[in-house]
Image 1 (tube, rainbow, N blue to C red):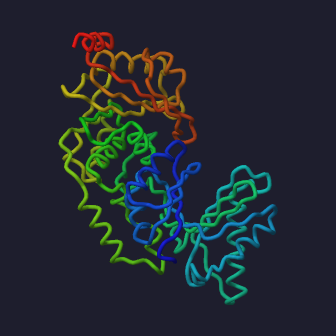
Image 2: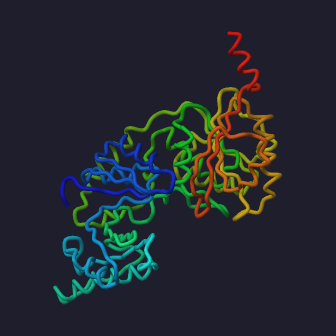
Image 3: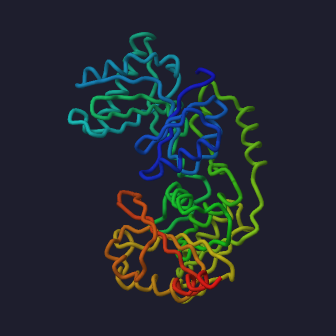
Length: 390
């Protein structure tokens, strides 16, 4: 592998700009936004750093080959054209993951993965007389194939399992929010640890945990057990440990409080367990509480981000729920920057508040909106009257 090479970080729709900013702040070069992805370049150490720190990346890939294919035979030849001996031996195991979009020829990702596997195996068999085995669970090399119309790209997956699997969450509820989605909406909301924070419907604690990690500048994936690159021949363990230690030295103090509420005691118990796993007990206060019976827990300005229940996976009376959210924010949460993510357009008709920002994102497969409701101390009219008099 060259000292300096191209990489591609995959993300969720709507977080491309956030991820690009993360990469620039980290020191990446040649940063370019794509659709659900950001390309950049760096060295081996930067590959390790990107996997350890990026909050809104799902994978970090290394593109190694691209070609056009209009049929099955051309696709097979394109995969076969890669010198696979540079990347694995016939003693190693491998797996192929495939995705396809906008193609009328290649419509099944499993079929693409199978054809790619055949081409790799055939190359080894014909050149060495032996073949590497497939291991879909813990392969030595994870190959990623992406097809868009006739354009095919082949990459090595440096991450392994999706980077949303941080390693701290072992207890979950019915509909846990994806960690990358949680970090993404926090960053879109402008959260940097500049005030007290509340998630009033925290479930198993993902949003408060991600909020604490952002506030204290703790690397997102510091708790992960492994990355795919650790199995590669060129893995430099001393460099990896050096980068890991350097990142941990850059953590910072956080002088405010992070609160998490949930009306289900079972959810709070899971959240407590996950917060402990993440080593964040000093930052996060959790309690069993019904948001609609609470008041703002601090006198100062409050930053709020939450993911209300939605009808797809958790049964809820949406009109009643959203009216209660609006009423509670108006009556009990002055001087609060309230952000919520929802896939319920019906609910917004009942909230009784007009969002000052709407950002399109996806929660799983559900098209959603991240909405911002600035709650002023006193009424908006009073605020402007006070400004006029001064």
